[in-house]
Image (cartoon, rainbow, N blue to C red):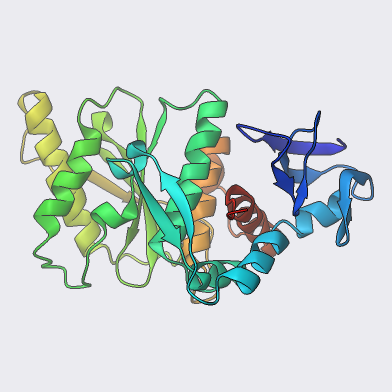
Amino acid sequence: MPVDSQELWLESLPTDTVHGIPLGEGNVRVSINVPKLKKSPVPIPTYDATTVEDAVNGAMRPLAYYAHSSMRQGNQIEVPIPYTIMGFDMPVFLSFEDIYEFINLQEISANCILVYMRYLEELCRINGQAEKFVFVSPSLISPVRTDTEDAGRRERTDNLLSFLRDAPKERLYLVPHNRGRHWVLGVIDPWEDLVLYFDPLREKKRDDFTELMNMALTDWKITTGEGIRRRRDCKTKILNRPCPLQEGSVECGYFILDFMRDIVLNGIDALESKQFYTSEDLDLIRGEWSGHIKPPV
């Protein structure tokens, strides 16, 4: 296929569909990231996708069609989330509102974040990076209230600590955090006692996040013996890092997805060197997210 970048799905069966049409024998399902020859015909054309360019731009169409035709009465799409992200195996259930808001670049939920984290984890496994990155569910560590004295902080600290235990050196933990209708991303390197903080609004307000990181990494140093080698009362280094700036008021969730994607595929330095994301960057994220969801047949 004439593309610069494409990703192979983990499984392709003859009964799987592309834009609603079964693959058939001898075909493999892929997600196209970068088209090389945009006007080249696709192997399985549809009424609205006959070229590679159409296939990229139309990645969200099948899901949007299914949501409008089958989910407005309350039906949901079940997406399994592995224990490596949640700490236990469990599904999330995407509602019509989840899909509508995501496709239309509106404020997105933690469920939407989780679905893309699952996609990135599978991508890491395909690329041989499964041991390098761990994705931590935002629902386990984000406050239930915006109050910085949240009574559940101890529980959230324990949730994060359960991921950090037995951490090998050089493993990074990607931790989306919602501080109250705004998404930020933390990247934890426990062996360096370091947390990188990426805020698409570039604000410095991170009270709950700071307390959570300090509590979790202090406990980690004690339980692993690192507290003996280092001073236990030494505060974890939490550094605000440069990252693309969001210009609107609701794009933060999409930026966090893009941050994680950039880190996994290109490294932290590549993320820090970017000043902005284009609409094409956000469309790529939304296309990957939509293509990763398989509505019931």
